[in-house]
Image 1 (cartoon, one colour):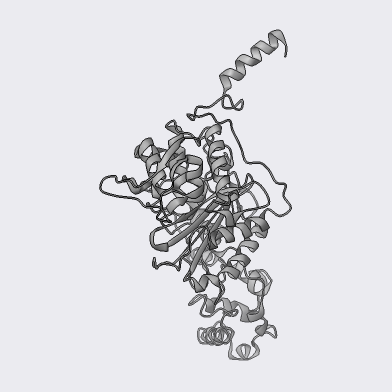
Image 2 (cartoon, helix red, strand yellow; image 1 turned 90 degrees about the vertical axis):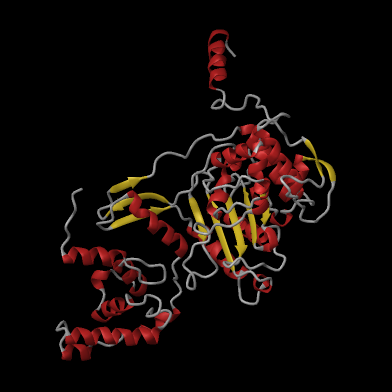
Length: 482
């Protein structure tokens, strides 16, 4: 392997183009533009010293957070420059803080999506060699991101409902149908925690995993109209219980999903086979290790919010897989493309009829008065599922329209129990409020319906699903006409 040698100036340049300057800003030029509104080529000596001083502690010596501490740190840097011979004592006396100094702490253009920016930065080096200035074009929708941040701030405000119910953390991620991540919240407060709970945290999704189980059941021959009995059961000395600790007798799978009945979900999983559930999860894009136990059906395996949200994508698209991504293109300093995303994901991963069956069931979760997700109801067709892990440690709502797939998680980093928070309460409301703002001005569309037949067998759907039949029809039409 041939190495590459860099001069000290080149190493310093690379470092300054990548180093963190607080407030979600990376690189000296971006920092100059953010803090002073000019290119790094045009900053004053004082401003250069301020940025240099921030490197010891980007948040501690940040002029927006601690203006007085930043001023003192800048003075230390300037004095050191005199000692090192870069400034004369006379020049040093003439350098004073600018008249706009105290406006730093009142600055309002706080950068958006700081957890998202970290997520992108961590990936960029996988696409190109970062030994030069690059421009990374991302998928973020600024309007949706602002809406998400304002709603999360309102939801998590001190003394608010979330705080009173012992909820300290939240995450939200929204995907376009092609997998583009258009909004991301990685936590309640980026300043206090850089950890991204949308991508890095692994938590139990609870009943939000049930759509995977029911889809596996459909692929094994079951249907929404299949009747099973909600009753006490024991498998391998383990007995699942329903959330309300009651049993309702015979019901269709449609009703079982709407009411989120645990015993029926376990029966579906065992009927389909856990191996099939694992395989179905993999088709939907879930790569996490799933347990091989009856409790698999109740979402006890830990997943990330991004992974669980993307798994609902094939329902929104009518069966096409969704691979989340955030980088569309990377350009060099001259604007020439170094990387351009191509391809549209894995293609069809489930049949259109099974996607239609899931949409029929999951829309009832929201639209029915018996549904666990009724607080997420929108003014347009939508579908989704609640999830609550044991002991109220995690609360989820994952849902979608044909235009947007969004997941919300709430809980505590230490796994501490919340005060009765379920996926159908605070997460469902946050999901509803975000979706309402994100989809404002867009036309309502029906969810993909497919063509559902008892037993889960597909009827002819669209040409791409039945290429042989389409070809034969074309031959007959060319001979006999329409």
